[in-house]
Length: 286
Image (cartoon, rainbow, N blue to C red; front, side, top):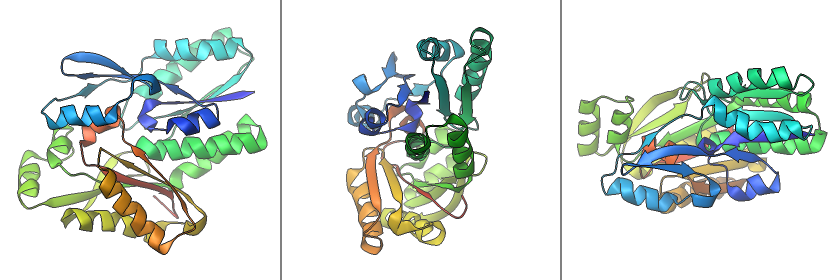
């Protein structure tokens, strides 16, 4: 038997984790001078964004190899294999920590497989890949086939998003201070995506929130494959109305597609900030 693992950077909806028996490894962050563990049991994204809007500046940290060993060990002892789909290595060292843990565990469990994959994805883009992998594993029951499917799918998994406040991107080194100030004054909203290497890239700028959301929907029209039969994910940083606006834009043209909407959690939200809205789908390219 193979067990699928991912981490809380995926923002995987809890109901999907339960439905497919996916193990989601907790992560830690600091907010208001206090260390906090992010898991399904204590996730309060609305409260997190309220604190950010009040001026709190969160900090995040990667998962260390000891945590992975702790999480993986009971599964290996039970005689199962592991497929771990990790947050993009271009954005975090978590993937490398998992790889180190797998190498250490291979010494004690040479008969078991611990497959660590750099998804080059983030937030619900990572969640969409995990969900599709879980469906594939349920269908075929084979780790090797599922691994191949994941590698084949990664290059087509689109991440398109916009942020409401450029100052959070400035804190993360994504835009300059002058760009953040001028963009805020002029209501300039960037359109960004995650590229083939899993890096965060600014693609264009538009004036106004609705135009930015429409620009994201336009990317689906340009690059989406079999849109009416797709599973599409939308995530947001405490901006449910804007997420609903984007969802409705898509459904007006593609009433047959299935759209899942959920929060961006604190680990990703610490860098993107309140008001972020993101769209994830399979396309002809990233």
